Image (cartoon, rainbow, N blue to C red; front, side, top):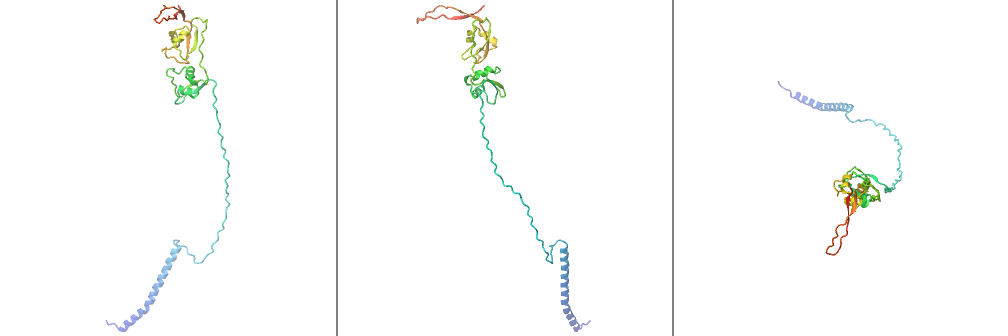
Length: 243
């Protein structure tokens, strides 16, 4: 099949003339597609809100609410004046609860009882063992008042019948033998009457009972012995039990 050169030339010229129109049409089509896509995007809420026309922006009205401000007032601070509490000195024996670390010596020193404190406490508290003088925490004891004196020695009634019982408070330097001699009694009877097992286990301030005139002092004159120095021994009186 033969091709006419003139037809080819004419066909080429037509294509050259249609080329710009085709390109322009494609461009317009692309622009239209882009506008459609843009409109859909904006109308869907995913894009920024674009206003084509300026709108009047209302000016907000500022309403101020008054704030109550309290100004602190300096309140004077009252300074408490310390009250001096004076501990009165007891005028009579009083109850005391033993505290941790207490002993009769500590208690006596705390209340200023002096040397008579322990004997007086033993006298006022018969439940305290005089041998050990142990007190325990929480124990309630009787404490003598400062200045309290130990009871004085019981005088011997001159005409007391045999076996008369009297109370006696042991004094410093006393022994059961000296007490027995003073009251014409015996050590054995004093021990039995007061349930004292050991005659040496007595203490100052202890209250005991003594029966008088169980023995009658009978002076006896031992043989006179003249020692080498020329001094003559003086006879001494001894006591013998009454029949």
